[in-house]
Image 1 (cartoon, rainbow, N blue to C red):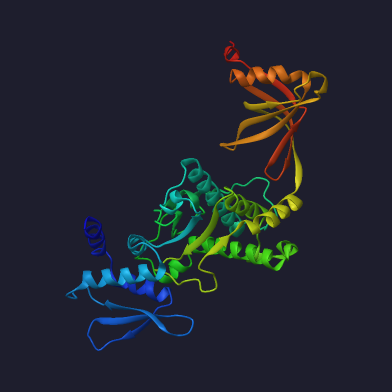
Image 2 (cartoon, helix red, strand yellow):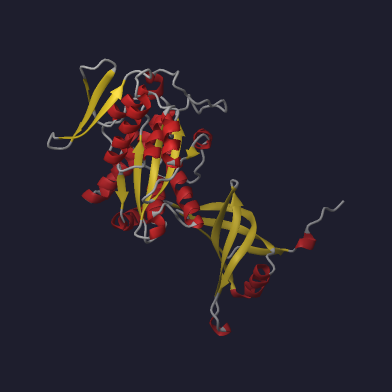
Length: 397
């Protein structure tokens, strides 16, 4: 009863024009009825049989307005196999595109909409990165095959204006809500509203980025299915897909061995839909290994000029027997462009005890040398190594 009361209170805020736009955008057909101020919508299956009907009032003055809208939303909910609250949320949102990342898994927790806290952060981080790279691919006029430094102030503004939406029952879904923006070329970014024309909404940078994202995911999937991997490097202009995007999709789909990721776009009801894009894309593990091989084979290898890096060591490994030792391998954590990152450090064996000491006491260290970069992999080979103990931090006159 309390749930129904909550839904009914939300429905009072739903305008019939929004419901009408939603139905037209999702392939329902509208016909007039003999009754004034009410129309009929129906949905057909692949054999042109009617599978659902909705009566929709065209005025809030209609006697059973709330009840009729409620019944319409329940029908949509049943057809789409989604919670009624989620349909209402879509109808009440300001002009926004939504990209949903559904985690499919047989565990009871996932089925109940629960996910481990660490996994949720990982999923959101990879989802954010993939959306970030798609925006870079769209905005970057040079259409680079691989970005050595993934940063664009315009994309930062776009991402900063996105929101995390609600999850849904039956699985865990991370929803990224992307409001329609007037532009991202300056710090004065403003969101569009229902007062903007449909043409202005259609031309929003948001629609361009979300459309680019879903088209790129679809293209990657079709390339794997058709075994045409070299076509990645013949995609031109708006079809261009960077290796960074392929890498981000691999990370997203492979973040947990037991999970399957489904990417579901919901384009705003307040603008024209995108007819040539599939309703969802499921990334099973079958797609991951071929994509990994593409990334490994084609991401360029390069060296960063010699400089120093300040951070901490989280692990140190070498051969247990002294006579067998040649090198020490460290995992080094440091900051780069305000983001935490890590690199492998290879040192000669005499540094082993120093590395253990730094790790045991959580001392900061300075690594000075050239970094070798191969995609996400970063390595220092035999750099200068120095421990910075706390008592060393002082300012001399």
